[in-house]
Length: 75
Length: 258
Image 1 (tube, each protein chain N blue to C red):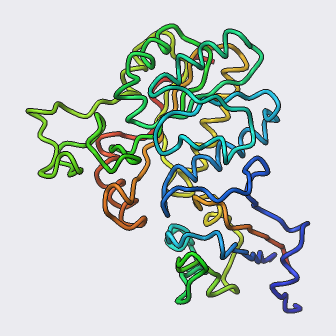
Image 2: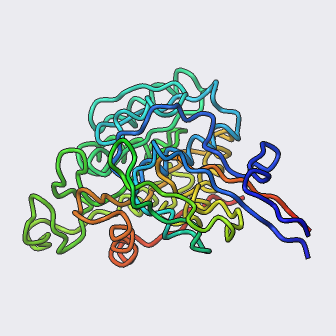
Image 3: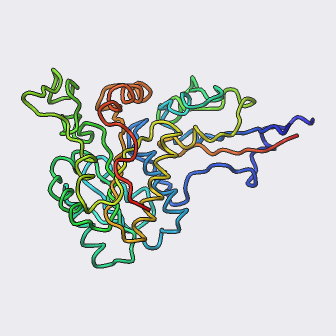
């Protein structure tokens, strides 16, 4: 069976740390970082990149459009 | 099966989702988690996919989204408070080949601009009205709006909205749906991925109806205001689902016959 693997790229400097993407992610891939960006926000990052399925849910709910999603079919 | 690395996936041919090219690089001034940003992104995506950049005129309101013209790369006009539908009427009548939309909050559309909204819908002007309803005056500091829920606390109703003295929240979408001039009236949300995708479909329908000169399209978006409601973005979305959605049920209110 073909397996789908995804990857998310978060623009850390533009992220405002609202956590909406973290709640929306069905596979708990995203989390808020403990460190902050230059504006003082705990930015979102791919804490478990291997679980990402490239569903784009995080990117479509992101109010600031900081997430880009890639997806590839393997196997 | 060979192990695939992160860098193997990050390639242009694997791109699944990116921010719309019509969104400018300016950082939005909205608070973290605000539904305005999501609504802007979806609107820009639809304008890009429908190839409307060259022939769109947007009308910005007064409210948080007053600086919307900095974020979406299409032509804009700025209206006086509440007068966006009146200005949109003029633009559409003078330039009927343009795609004209207004983007208004509840203080703009449901309070000071009630007359313009209702009469524009009653005349059936061929425009799209996007109404962001977060039940509060966000920009000026969270005062009570006509759409504030019964019992909901705001800076001017610290004990909660008292319906006996202040009246009930106004359901603008249901009101304009009664008018013969409106073609398509729907209520959507942008707090979940599913909601965003439905909102996008609604916008595409509105574009189609405007191209066919069918009448006014009115899309209400039930949104949040984390700063005005004094909640975190995630809490505000949950509060909205529990309290706003029962009063403002999502879904199509008026759909034209095919």
